[in-house]
Each structure stands twice: as structure tokens, then as C-alpha cells.
Length: 454
Image 1: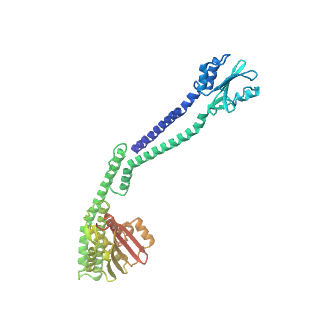
Image 2: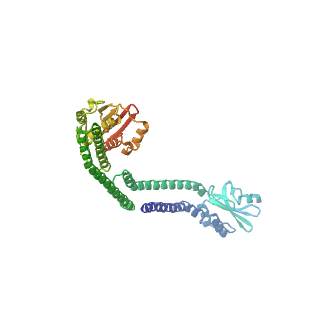
Image 3: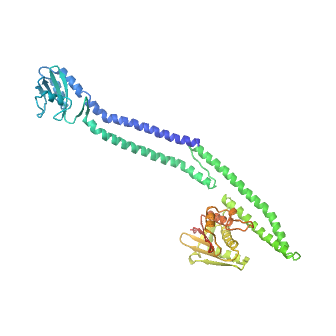
């Protein structure tokens, strides 16, 4: 977590530095946009400076030719009013500008505009110097002034800058998110794989290498634990088989011993039958653990499913099943030549588990149906019975938590538990799909769907 914190902190620092750089760029853009306006309008041609220069250059005959050209270059007109408000002289005076004013007129235009011309005045002892700038060049404020171009451009500048900033921040966020997602996606995938109990080997360079090392260490610990668990189950299964075989052997001999009483032979037969169920349970448990931890070698080869299903049905009937059970086999026309890549031994084991589940779950007897269908993309193998079925609660329990402990009673009779879990794992090992459907009192139906061989 420390390495991940450093990784995130690095990106937060990068984002902060980018925001700081963006702020600096905004300041430079503001200076570049408005600096020229401020320099031009508040430089040599500014009202304050021009009034100062004109006052110094003013004489009884007017102003010098140099000052006149300077006024012309900036489109500025000028006039000098005497104490009575009469114009003593003027230069570049527009036609609409009067040449005589009252004291009230002077009071009004000296702080604002004269015929929409922004004007600026300077007291010259017994006269008043008036400079008029082009219309829309300044916005006069009380005691101050602003260039009208600045006022017009400022809202556009703020809006444009804000839009660009938002766009840049979004782009930085988007590409940062993509980069973080790209860098962390292998880690998240590996964690999900670990949560499924499967080992991973993650190789990442850079800031996240420590996290990758931690994930790999966790994977190694998990693999060792899975190996130890599988080895323990395998060892226990091996140790149980020998005494169990002896129990079955002795029970079988007692059951067939004519010298023993009928009750003893019957009880011996029960011991033998239940020992056989324990043996099957141990074998299933061992196979489940091997499939769960991917320690069971799967030898896949092209298998014609119609031949496999018929062979199983023949073997089952030859081995004999009680008369209260009947077996039906149905293979659709399109499934006669259906072939899948599979381990025939494991698929037969899955079919047998489903059939035995139907037998064990319906002691009153039932009809067991084996059906094979095929389409362009799916080969479907279905084992169904018309027996007692499962309740909705039990079906939901099996789908959410298929585990043999939940489905084995005190007599060790399998009840759609470990057998179904093994079938599901065999199906998933072949990249297939496992589906179970049941309605209480109407039977149970299990479908295994596989992709056909290409």
C-alpha cells in the first residue's frame, strides 16, 4: 500500500505542477493580451502624458508643428478655452464640437465626454486646455479612465481562457486516468485471479513493481497452500482406500457366508454398500481438489459424443440397475457426428455422477433420460429425471454454494452435492457451461454445453 500511495502521490504532484504551469501560462497570456493595450494607451499617447507635454509646449501662438503632428498621428484634437468659455485656438477640431461653452458645459464634459468624444482637461492659469480622443477609445470613470478596447476584450479573454483551462484540465485528467488504469489493470486482473484461487505471475516495472512483487508473493503462498491442501487430501484418500478395501472385503465375505445368520449377512451387505459409497466419495473429493487447484491432468482429444454416450448407456445397463429405474437415450440427428475436444474419461465421470445422483435422490424409482443435441455453436448433453426434484430454496443453495457438506446426510447418501460440484468443475475445465433446473415433484434436469471441435 505504501508503494501505491507513492504512485498516487506522484500523479497528484504532477497534476498540481501542471495546474501551476497552467496558471503561469494564463498570467503570461493576460500580459500578452492586455500589455500592448496598456502600454499604448497609457504610454506616450496617454491623456496624462499628452496633457503634460501639450501644457509645456503651449505658447501664445499655439503649439509647435511637432506636437501638431503627434496629435494627428494619434487622432487627437485640442482646443484652449479662456475664462469666458470661448475657444482661443484649436487644432483638428471636429465640426460638431462647439467653440463656446458656459461654466456648466465645462463642468459636465471635463469629467466625461463631449459629443461622445472622451475629453481630458488641464487648468492653465486663466485658461483650460482640452484634449479630445477618438470616440470609443476610452471609457471615462469618475476620477479614472479605461481603454474601451480593454473593456470589450476582457470578457472574451476570461471566457476563452476559462474554456481552454477546463479543456486542458479535462485532457490531463483523461490521459492520467487512462495511464493509471493501464498501469493498474494487470494488478486488478491478478488480484481477481488470486481471489478465484488461481496462481499468477505479474511482471511490472516502475513505481508499481513493489505491488507486483507483493501480489506474486501472495500467489506463491496461495500456490503452496493449495499444493499442501491437495497433497493432504490425496494422502488421506490414499490412506483411507487400503483399510476401506479391507472392510469391503471382509463385509463381502461375511455377506456371502452361508454359516452366518441372515441378520448378520444383511448387516454385512449394508456395511459393504456404505463402504463403497465412502470409496466413491473419497475418489470424488480427491478429483474435486485436483480440478479446483488445476493439478488434474486433462488429456483432450477429439471425441464423438454420440459414441461416448451410447457406450456409457450400454455399460450402465450391463452393470445392472434396479428395475424401478429405467434409462432412455436420445440423440438428435444433428448430434450423430458432433465432436468436441475433451477428456473422455472425465466426461463419462460427469455423466455417471449425474445418473447416480438421480438414482440416489429418487429411492422410489424414476426414468432417467440422456439426450444429446447439437447446433452450429453448441453441443448440449442433458441428463434429466422425472423424480422428486429439488425445492426452489435447495436449487438456489446449490447454485450459490455447491458444496458436498451441505448435501450429505448421516447415512452418507449423496444428495446433489459433491457429485454436482465435480460435474461443474469438469465442465468448466472443458470451457463448457453448467446449468441445473429443477421443479419439486417434477424432476431434475442438468445440461452441459460445449463448443464443437473445429
